Image (tube, rainbow, N blue to C red):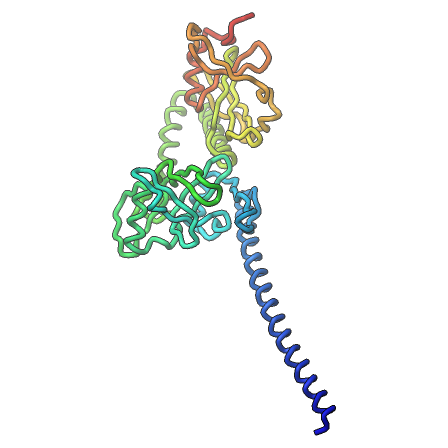
Length: 358
C-alpha cells in the first residue's frame, strides 16, 4: 500500500476514535444533566405541593453545597406538619436533614445528634417554632433502631418490635443548636403513641375536640341563649383559623383603663401579628378573638412601646408586666386568653394606668 494512503487511513482511524470517545463523554454528560434535571423537577414538585397546602418556604427547596447551605424553614402550624408527616411524609423531605445519635458525645440524659446521610431521624425547622426532631419514616423496622427511640421519645402503647409496629407522633422532640446544619442537642423529649395509625390518632383527636366543644357550648346556650351561642361559635371559629394561620397565641395585651384587648401571634418582631379581641363582662369575664385575621405588629402602636413592671404596692395588679405605648394608657401582658380574662376580672372597679403619674 502506498505510504501516503496508509498515513491518510491511519489519520482517519485516529479521528474516528477521537470522535467516538468524545461522543461517549458527551452522552455521559447528557445523562448526568438529565438526572439532575429530573431531581430538580421532583424537588420543585414537592415544594409546589407544600405551597398549595399553605406552606411558604423561606429558603430554596433545592439543597445547596454544605458551605453555602441555607436554612429551609416551613411557615406551617405544627399540627399541619404532623398531618403531612403521618399521611405524605415524602413532601417534607426537602425541608429535613437526616441525623443520627452520636453516642460518644451523648452524656447521661443529654443526647447529641449529628448530621448523617444514613441517620434514622429528621431534623426540621419551622418558622418561630424552633428545631424539631422526627423519626425518619420507614427507618424503625428493626428492634435495635426502635430501642434508640427511647433515648429521644417517651413511648406509650404496645411495641411489638417485629417490624410491623405502627406509631404516630403525638409531640415531636425539641432540639437546641450546637453547630448550624450539622449538630444538635436534645432539649425536650418527644412523645410517640405505638399501636395507633396516624390517621386513626387524628380522628380520635377530632372526636375529643368535638366533645370538648359540645361541653363548652351547652352551658353557653343555657345561660346566654341563642345569641350568646352564635357569638361563642364565631369566636371559636376565629380562634381555630388564627391557630392554623399563625400558630398558638403568644401574648394578650389587656388595656388597664377600659375593657379592651389585643392578641399577639408569633414571637419574631418581623413576623408578629396583632389581632383585635372582644371582651365579655357578663355573666362571666371572657376575652376571645374578635376577628380571624390581624395586622402586622410592626405597624401597630405597640411597635415602639416599652415593657415596664408595676410596683408591688399597686392595688389592682401588683408587680404586673405591662406595655406603655406613649399615651396615658397601659397594657397588661398575659400569656393566654384565659389569663387575660383573669386580669380583666381583677381590674373591674380599679381601672387606670399601672404607672405612677409624674
